Structure formats: C-alpha cells, structure tokens
Image 1 (cartoon, rainbow, N blue to C red):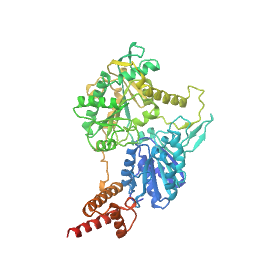
Image 2: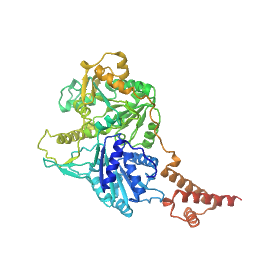
Image 3: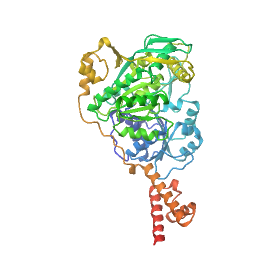
Image 4: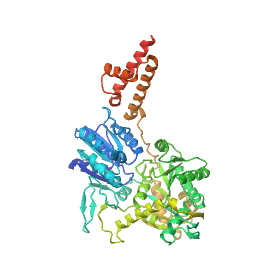
Length: 563
C-alpha cells in the first residue's frame, strides 16, 4: 500500500480473508457507515502495489459519489479521475477512474475495451443497483467480465426481483430459491456492538388527519390507526402536506432535538428527506421560519447539487433538505437528526435513508429519526437489525412469505408514487401532530412507558421518553468519552490528482488562447509545437508534470516576445 491505512477490526478481518483467498470475485456486505470505502481502497492499494492490477475502475450509483470516491482515494494514495468521459482517455498519472451504472449502460462495450486493455480491479459500489434494471445488469456483465478482480460492495443486500446481480454467487435454498452468498458480512447489529455505528431512536408522531377523497367525501382519521391501504396512504400524505400543522410541528420538535445535540456536538446537522422537489422547497421555508436560518436544499436536477452537499458536509449549518439524492452512499458523518417525510416505504429505501445517520464519530452517540406513525415504517424501524439476502426466483404463491411481502411493498410504493399527480380531487384539509411512541432496539415504547422528567424531555427533544432504566442506560453511554468529534481529514485540493490535473489543463488552454490573440497562431498549432518541444501525448492524456512543462515553455515564449 502507498500509505498506511488504519483499519477497524472488521475491515482487518475482511482484508485478511481476501488476502488468504485471493478471489477474482468478492462480495462484501457491510452496514452503512461501517467503512466499506476504506476497506475497498485498502484492497485496491495493495493489489496495485503488488502488481496484481494496473488499473482501478469504480462504478457508483450517482455522479456525486464519483467525486467522493476520488477524494477518499486521494487519502489512500490513489489517483482516481471522476470526470473521465465515456470516450475520453485516462491521463497516465492516474491509477483509474470512476463512472456510474447509468454511464456504464450507455456504452458497455467501450468500457469493456478499457478494462481488457489493462489488468483491472473493478469496484462495484452499492452493487444491488446492478439489479435495478435489466439493462444495468447486462451492462455490468458485459463491461466488467474481463476484469482480473471484481470487488462488490453493498450495505442493503435484500431485493426481491428476478434480476440476478452480476458476479454474485447464489446458493439454492431448501425451498428451491437462489439466495446470494456474501464472502464477508458485517451487519448493523455487529457494528452497533462494536461502536462503529450509532444506535437509532425513532420518534414516531401520530395526529388527527382531515382530507377530502377523490369522490368528494371528507374523512377524518388518526394517523397510524387501523385503516384501509388507500386510507392509510391518504392519511400519510395529509400529514406530509407542507401546508398542514403536522409537518411544522414535527420539524419544530426535530429542531429542538438538534439544538440539544449541538450543545455537546456543535457541528451536528439534521436532514429532511422529502418525497418531491416542491415539498422540499416548502419544507425548507418552514425550517427557515422555525430556525431563523435558511437550510441547504439539494435537488438532484439542479446545477451545483453535489457542491452544495460537499459544502454542507464540512460546514456547521444546521439543516439540509433533499429529495432522494442523498439517500444512499453520500457520506455526511455529522448528520444526527432526521425527518423521514416521504411516502416511499420500501425496506430497501428506508434502510438506505437511515444509513445516512448511523455513522459514529465517537462512542456513545445516538441518532434520532422522526417518522410518521404508520405500521409499515414502524415495522422497518423495528427490523433495522435484521439482515436479509438478495433472493431471486422465489415462488409467489405464499402471500405470507417475507420476500414476497417485500416485492409487494416495492410495487405498492411505486404505485403510490406513480399516482401522486393523478389523485384529482384529493385534498389535504388539515392535520396536527402528537407524539406517539419511540422505537428503539426492536422495541416500542408508548406513553404508558414514558418518564415525565422535564430535564429528560428537554434532552431528547420530544414530548415523551423511554422507560427510566433504558433512558438512564442510553444517557450513561452518551456521556462516556466526551472527546470532541474526530476531525474529518479532507485532502488539500492541490493534492487531489484529478483536481490538479483539471486545473493545469484549464491554465494551459487559457495560455494557448491568449497566445492565439497575441500572435494569431491557431490553438492546434500551438498545442502541436508544445508537444514537439516537450514530448508526451495530447493534453487530455498528459501527466501533470507534462502539462506544467508546457505551461512553463509557453510562458517563456511570451516573455521573449515581450522582450
């Protein structure tokens, strides 16, 4: 390895298992926040150092994660280009590049040629996305098949469709289904015991909902009480309506919780996960009214979204409001309080969303997630520590079957999302919020279990509390080792290879343009002269040192011309 990597116990154990087996394919399942990126980069650096591979290719779900991986790689002494276009060429001073699953699907054969050209390690980040669409899975299979090593990573290995994930081994279960087999697993329960992740307190809020149906009937019901599927969905959407009182009251409670956390952890942040962009903007306005501070809003289709996430990550701003974009993979360790304000209720999405809040910076921390008190979300909260594998080909005859239930949940969520704009006369008329229960460690604690101690109520920031012995244990853990949170080390921009390379190319192109205006010499002729005098390939493939040499030479021409 180029630089020494300090590994957690599970990372060292997984690394040793990989070293002893030296497999072509290796699937690592580790709960969000456990440190999959560090583990993978340690493997990559070792393989590169020993000459097993010559190039690293990283495939991610989103564009933002490409840059995040490149920065993390720089800290491990690896140079990854996150901006390489599908038809571009990699500069010689890079160890590899990052792309997305969608980008891979655009030109799988082109990426296959790249991977065939050199001995390559492919890192498939959140590999379950390869099963999102048949075209994505096919693209991963086609492009990555020639790789000499493939390292697959996931924190949520449970899916229920019939699209097998490429390069994952499956074993036949007793009922005939094929179940994925991980080479190394590190679940939330183990990470919680090791202090790698935070325990999560789910603050469930109910309240009275009032809405008008498509048929024109007005309905009043309490959120979370037994209702039909349609009525439950309509009650939930009424609660999430930005114009009702429920969201304003829950956001206020969440902000009070965040203020309490910030007494001990001054840079602690909160995030609202919204279901759509218009709701996100309205939630942001509510938060601005409550807090007096304008929150950061991240919408995936707006320019600069990745930059706003990066700025929020290293700032001490209190609140971020986002639509899905930061539900998976994006690393914001200071997030401590969340508001789950979306109708998306699949187990997969819920686990990904909660994964943004569980990364621990010191022992004794807790995360607080405010959720609507609806049965499906509370079930997901209670089952957070249960781990399920990706299963394909499961019979669908048994409706009680767990994996079939997950498939139905996904279908219901997709159906609900697809009909949001087709509800016609549906209208949320009003709502209010009231604390319902806490879900913690698989148990639920309602009003009858709660303490009335005012100081403890203030500490938790909610109108209710766990039983005294459980609260005492939680508070005792949260007060040990009061060291300040570890500083997140971000490599200086000048030390990050891809940023330095882009900066030098911009500087060179600017100087060539200035030389053209001064002399009339075409840009291409100037670039050709520089290559002739300095040697090396075209600017896109040139190393940083070669680019700097051309810049210095061009400046010397300008000085001589001025003399």
